[in-house]
Image (cartoon, rainbow, N blue to C red; front, top):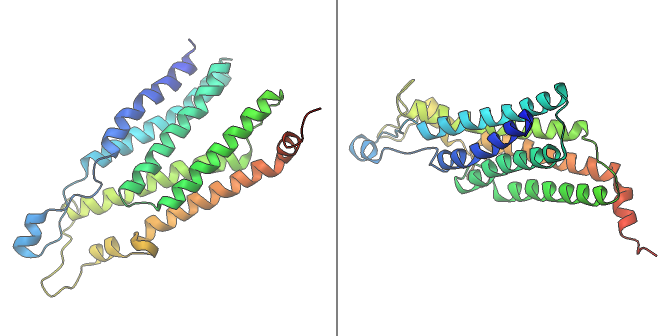
Length: 232
């Protein structure tokens, strides 16, 4: 097995560990502090920090295996199949967990996953016709935006959790109901009750993903059109 493929398999093996830490609550509130002094405090989000580190390392291996494969002429059919599969498993795992943790709207993740399934199906049809769909710049931008957006969301919750735990400063709400600046940022909500920053990042990821899918379909529409015609 080539070194590039070993790196790819390492990324897949990291996903279960990422899932374990990423599935832990990103914000854990100290109920005792609230009951005793009306303070909104959180515990430091250690699990989220570990999840972010694992996600960043796994994302880096995506670049690394491709670089090694090209530089040392280790491009294989196995790598062509497994590498994009590993990427989709990693990204979709994070996005699905975000839905359960209230960090991303469910419909956004459904749209993103639908795009991935459609393009994957298109690649399979193209392969059966002996045609390889080359990666487009929109596809590369989509991947970067998805990874960057996931990292940004994790950093947001790590920052809020760290501040709330007193790692940087106290995040309190006084008995008269007045919020500090940090707590205002934390509870500033957008549509559907999501934090404004997180909701904005979700929209960026979704719109870029939709455009990327549209670009793939537009450039390869002849494959779909020919497939809709009954073969004689």
